[in-house]
Image: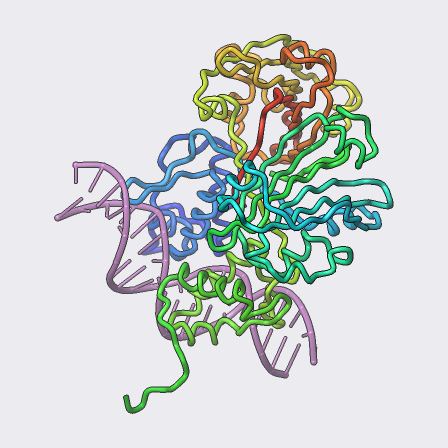
Length: 239
Length: 239
DNA sequence: AAGTGGTCTAGACCACACC
DNA sequence: GTGTGGTCTAGACCACTTC
């Protein structure tokens, strides 16, 4: 056709198509790790779409660790793609119900007290902070599923003292009543201690999966929890 | 001023500011869990910004599990906010180096063979698929850090047979040479078996953290790996 | 049928990094 | 200074869902 340029252009009209094409070129090693790829404007021309569309496709790939982007420098294929796994951290009741089991929980112990030094310093709390110390056992179909050892800063969540924690677990109460907290989470493996083993009805020393969670709201510590999962527990996701 | 409306409007000019304001309203329980929030157009008016800006702020919160969005229905605060943790899964060498230690690895065993039924069925491979079976020990400052048991489908990655895996670990070779694979990953805790304990120089039965990874490229299985981490290993992230 | 979010466009300006 | 990505805007149309 007269007037038509002879540059190859595609017609990719959604950011997903653009993303798929980018990924294809990386997967098929058309663009090698560490190499710069064309800039947004050029890709937009090639793909016959707006720059914003290319931007969205590339931005998400950068977030996923597939691309490295820098202003002025440009965009390159990540040399050492760090895979990012996304894990859903549901409340325990949902976790159990998703397995098709019936959930219930039992409070083993509940005390108003001050926290030991280790917990206090981790939560950056002063010496006499009043806390609620809870030990709870969660069941799946009447089999011990998880043993929870939790410290709650009652200054941040005073209402929890009036809550009936035998009906709604502390876990669930906090999620519903202190929304949008931040925090950190750590996974590890440990040999069960005598107390933990007894609660979970396993042999002392059996390997248990541990999740430790610390939760903050506006830079103030809300709660620290150590969750001990019965043997057989697996945490899995797609990557 | 004459002509000025008396609707309260804010001046939030970046999607981050909008997001922060939304989060504030949820955190301070101005908008309750399960409740609908105003639609994008209305928020854009209130915040004095474009609808696209509001859209980006809300979209990211929905991805994070804080909001539930549906066309026609509208946007509501999630009733049971499922927290999503993002985990970086680096290659082992980087993981060790990030801890400030010196990395090296040693191949314990390397064989061309066919896989046992369990592995084959997990990877959905036919009976006589030729595989490479590798057992590798990874060190941090000459202390055993992780024991890796890996099966590789050599049909998908024939070049790996020519690679010098004593210089670059299989892990790293695969990441660099088969980019953009998908897969699944699972975390668990186990008591170490005799073989694993011997390699990691620990007592048989000591709890070890297990990562199992299966990797696919275009629906074809590339590799299955079982990674056994020495006691003390923690996987952590912010949430 | 109608209302909401999902996305695309074309253009503009800004912020950062490298010079 | 200069070039790249980062973001915002105003408007438009589409897709899904509920009615």
